Image 1: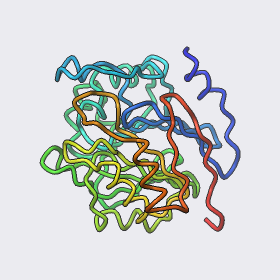
Image 2: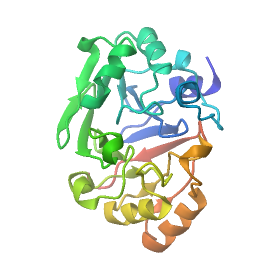
Image 3: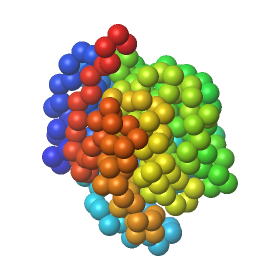
Length: 262
């Protein structure tokens, strides 16, 4: 078991809080007070290079073999979100784990060896209670790249974390998620393949009004665009000065507390 796996296993999360770790690209792990561990979009292999020729420039901080999870949420079917090499390992080593994803992921999950009984279909504009977390969804705008792509809010007993998945800036689509008064926003910032750039993401921060904003989906592949995480911090200072915008390194964790009155 590697260092991050040990850290997640040993972490004791107080009531009214959630601990999160960035896994690189759009991947995150979350641990709730009762010990529930949820992963979102864990890209932990070199499948993108194997299938598409994009070399991985930053190493995954945890191996698929070391993942221990009760729930994996996938925002859409692209290889750097639905990892065809890591998910079979996660599914085999976590036989009770369920996999929640939109319709475009059904074939990929089946190919990864996830039985239909372990799959949970996520549809846009719904809320699903799953294993101690409520998953709220809204349609993302990833264009023709993925018509069923979703943005999500994970609600851990009032601690609410929004993950944009891959999307352009479409404020009207996300209003139901913004209305939840999220504590943390995790926006993509790579600016190509139909996704927000760092300025778009900062404008989303202004609209969503989280307490904390942490960018993701950058510096994994040269082909995904220049990306500007420092520019995101600067843009947040201009557009959303009351929001704490920060960067995490792969494998770094952060404890988030519930917003007062929530």
